[in-house]
Amino acid sequence: MTLPASFPAFRIHNDAAGYRSGIEDIALDDLNPGEVVIRVAYSSVNYKDALAGTGQGKILRRFPLVGGIDVAGHVVASTDPAFREGDAVLVTGSGLSETRDGGYAHYARLQSRWVIPLPAGLSLRESMILGTAGFTAALALYRMLDNRQTPDLGPLAVTGASGGVGSLAVDIFSRAGFEVHAISGKPEQAGYLQSIGAARVLPREALATTRPMETARFGGGLDNVGGPMLASLLAQTTPYGNVASAGLAATADLGTTVMPFIIRGVSLVGVASAGTARDIRDDIWRHLADDWKPAHLDAICTRETTLDGLPAVFGQMLAGGSLGRTLVRVG
Image (tube, rainbow, N blue to C red; front, side, top):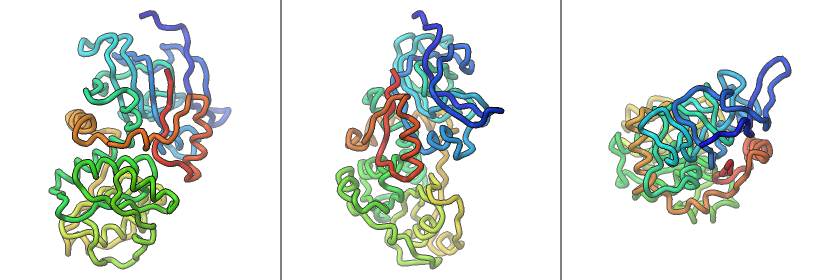
């Protein structure tokens, strides 16, 4: 396939002219080297993308870079025989929009070691409604199950439940056979959360305790918020339950005691999706295309945008106004 001399990309700069981002025309040679070139069909917007695109978080480690930590499309050229022209593929995390050019461009050049063949059971569109958010939620479940989490331990709580990771976690966890209690500061979204799998929707006050131990009411859960809510969830988790930490929407601080760990055997597990080992990455995408595939992807995809619409989406997301997932139509 003959590639165009230039193509649009949402690029991020930080130099003598200041921190700025926007659409500009670039050439393939402007992208980082890699074995696989794809024509991008879709990307997505994650909280990390909003931080990177606005400069409100120190995400990028080199400049300039194309933004977008998720990408899905079709291979147009490859020096790795494992990939052929026309193959449908995806990549999430793996240094995209941190140390390497990401998915907010009509073409992406990728390292083949991170490229995932699109699993049977997923379309390219569905893979990017999932994206890093769905991968993170599934990785949390994967880690909890690896530490002997079972539905018998009690319901799983999900904090920040109306966001991208939270919404997909509600659906994925319920799909995997767990009762899910969604914790949200947006009471107007209770119907939405119940429609995607939440058995109960609880206000933030359900995790407002400041005592080191409380009555155990959750088998564990996924926290996207940090700070007091995570500490409270730990204090209310049943013996040998697992709490996965995946975000810091409120704060990176954590003030707690060792009591849940040494009295109830509660485990706090970390979820770092970006550098997940390839064998685990492959296993999680197999689950997401099969037994953990969310049943309500179309409902969770509450907005679609193009590269032109990214700044407005970033602003709304950082102001706490996002719901579910935003899909980016690139191709």
